[in-house]
Length: 494
Image (tube, rainbow, N blue to C red; front, side):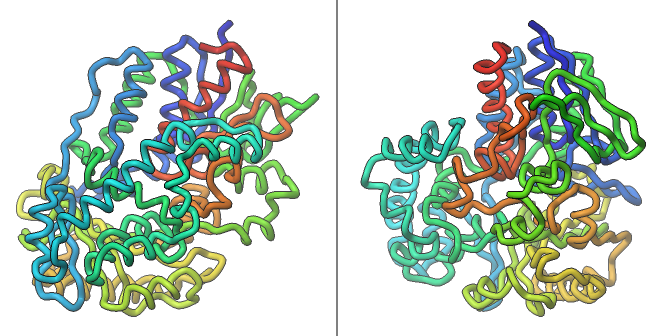
């Protein structure tokens, strides 16, 4: 029996959900607060330059293939291109950048003589991470959980050899394996730029090293990441999915344990049989549903990922020292990580990521120019609510980048835009500006994460980063599949 669905939010999770449902013949309406689809996976155009607003690459691209094939689309509608080298890292204490290769022999050459026998050490490290990944992927990442007990019982099926992963941090794992600070930092960067630090992130997330360096790698989308959203929108138009933009849901109306409709900021009611929220699964329960377990006081005590501070620069000239993906780090990784979460002032020597998509997609910038996207993870609005110093921080980062890449960027800026955590919070409904939602602490994963089915309302579900299985583009695609599994069991929807 065909159903009518309303999806709140058009991030990748919401769009994936709409594609799966509409491909089965269900009527789908997507309500989006923003004027364009994509959520954080959005696009910014100004003065002839085009930027990806948020994500600039992805891993586990086979999850995209699964999404399209499950919807009867056998040919990938976007062109994915693998990055090799994956990225390069600039350390403050070294004059040259270090390129990060999946080929471990090349990687060893890059770090000689800092880390003897790097290929052998990295191979063993990635082998352990890969075994953990494959032994837990279906049990933990790709499973629905109705209770914490069910989750714990499922964990007992994980081989005992992986038990130490649960009690060590990611940093302690790399510290046990590698001798040089630089290589330890390289193998823990994935935690830092996913909004946490390796000193807090459980060592189970070394599996991310496996996915980036061995299992699948990092990939970009030809034409920019927003090309994925455009491809999805084309497919959804063919399936007659309706969109209402500039539509923010402010109230959920219920009766008899079911949602009857949702009300937008203009007072209009939207009715459906089943509702799916692509808004943050934790803050939606607190701010919209007014649940006692998700009050602001309780939400503030949860562990959220760092907030994004982003700068979009159109720059005259070509900068040969920069690649598609670049990381700029200081010389005190531990000290920086220990203070960045809770600092009330902007970092004086910030760590940041730089994406130059014009290196691989020249159309993103006018000829003879570069488009530079800078992401600096900063404290969220719980700790730093005042961003009056945003211009100072931006200039600090641009000056540092100019010095380290050997090009006077500030003197060649054609256009510029800054988004601080307040902007991110307002634009994309991110709780206190947290860039990727809830962090992946052991008490915030699996059944300990906000559930993808509402506890009280039988026809309300959640898709996206702060529900099962977690944050990141492939994870939110998986989250849409998990909702389909629930709908199949609970409504007979196929």
